[in-house]
Image (tube, rainbow, N blue to C red; front, side, top):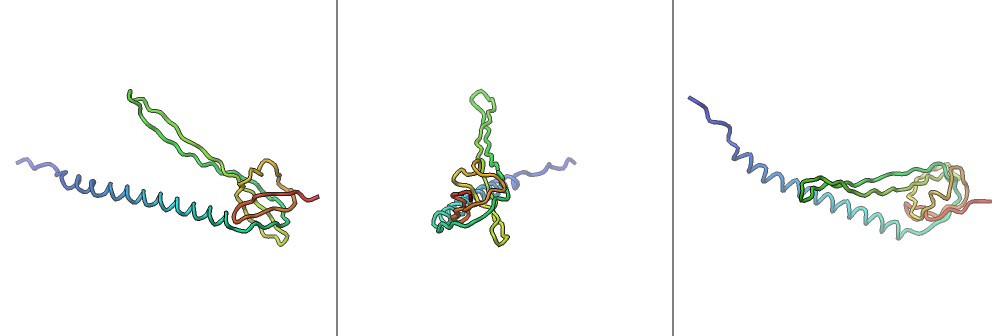
Length: 133
């Protein structure tokens, strides 16, 4: 006697349940990331600006790349995407404390490690740097 093969009926039902749940979780995750980034931006934008004497101890970049792939009507795959570079400057203050700030005013190319002067800080952003004489 030949035994019947495996039944796939239950597996398909499971997939039709699992896939929408995973898509929903992904969607919720993306919404949470947008909300957190927006809250961080608002917090920094509303923070008071302060100026303090500091020394630039390091600079770094962080590259974020988003890629996409799609097929055209002829079945040929095309790749695309976008990249964004974030610039960070680390300051050392008179008390020895060091903190890294996001460069939102394009200061990265205008300052060098070892420069000293007055840094204008707004939340987690560095918004100006005036070299000391």
